[in-house]
Image (cartoon, rainbow, N blue to C red; front, side, top):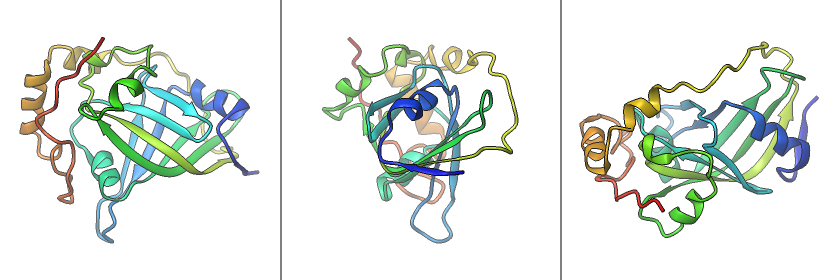
Length: 196
């Protein structure tokens, strides 16, 4: 049924890159902290950087739990499910890090996402994950579902924001600069998004 992999390549990489949706799971170290599970989508916002490293764009949202948990302890699991074709679930358990706009690595990482315009989505950070365990499982109970298209609402909402107004929007939100458990989240104000 399940198999462990040493690297993300070949059929495994093809499967991951073909999925329009994946999930992230993180948690703080405290025993009574909030476990976070988030869906991630938008075509072009995920990239396999090498055989053991993946990354995705962290866009504007109502919370910053993933960023806060990664800043505290780095633990993250990513999961993809086959909703079409043969049943399959792939999980990457690893260590993650938010790379913020003012990090010297940011521009080079952003270049790895040529098929999406980050300016219209309120890009906050790039999440880089180094895989420690890569496993798949059967996915026999995952239902068939059809992917139609990405929603346009996120881009329509955040395309009207510039760096200053986006920072002001985040400052008004309760759980952007600080997580639900009081951990540091996204540093505000946002540094400018310097796009080529």
